[in-house]
Length: 412
Picture 1 (tube, rainbow, N blue to C red):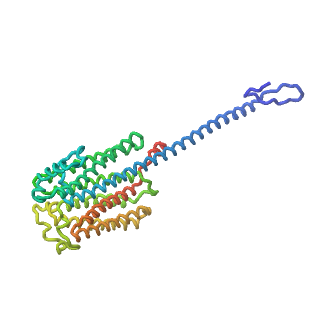
Picture 2 (cartoon, rainbow, N blue to C red; picture 1 turned 90 degrees about the horizontal axis):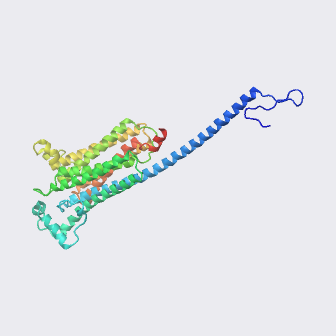
Picture 3 (cartoon, rainbow, N blue to C red; picture 1 turned 45 degrees about the horizontal axis):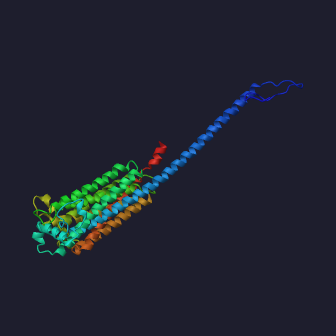
């Protein structure tokens, strides 16, 4: 006869053939056994579920790391193109090529003149502006083509940057490779690029009527906005990079890094004024200016504020003082970092930024002493952007990477 789950094993009494009796204690034991079996199965199921969940999180984190790397390298490419754009823009200014294209055609302008008739048409448009009539009268067609190609290349690069930002952005968005936090920020990056194109034409327009050069104010704004775009893209890229830091950086270093990035941008704005006024040729000695520590012509314009933006001597003087101030602050930052409890990567970055700043100051001095040769001046402009990138990388490194979205969702 079979036993039910609640039946106890037979316990013999004295004498054979006696029937087994049920023991209450054995019933309780069976209950404990079944309860243990139920809970052990639940525990096993829970363990399997937890194991599956951990594996899923690890897979999601791996995908997130891959997506971050792809987006990061794309942003590096964008920043590299912006750097090239700044250098070509500098060459366009230094060769007086910026006014060679007198119209803004965002779409059709991508096609350069392809025939002799096209070249004659473009040349005739250039002959109508003051720069030709007052400065370049009698210019040959071949000389015009030289300056035209510089300006066309500058605009072409701008268009290519727009495509390199917009098309991958759309692809990454549609394929789900973008973290939610990045989407509005990358749209802002794209919008800044469009704004930069409009600012560029606004700058060119200032030189088409009543003057032979573009406004130094608009030139400085155009250059500074390009560097803001570079800095913003590089900031986003470095936020997606893995950082080896394990503890929070000292607040003083974070504050200094933020200040230094802003001051480098301000110095670049002053450099734009120097370029717009040809102020690099105003004084070609160093460490003095025109033989004096403070040249007399520094305050020639009235009202006094105009000297800060319109007096070539004063603008070059301000640019020099800005460089000295940056070097001093970069040195202070390195000393503070070395004496703080900051991690080794933070300390190394302060030394790297200081070294780049020293290199940039040296190139600037040579540019002045050699009377602004094209190659040296362009190198000076390129290293300025590299210095900005180093300052941004240091600031972002102190803050660390963006938190992993998958990890936050798993904790939630």
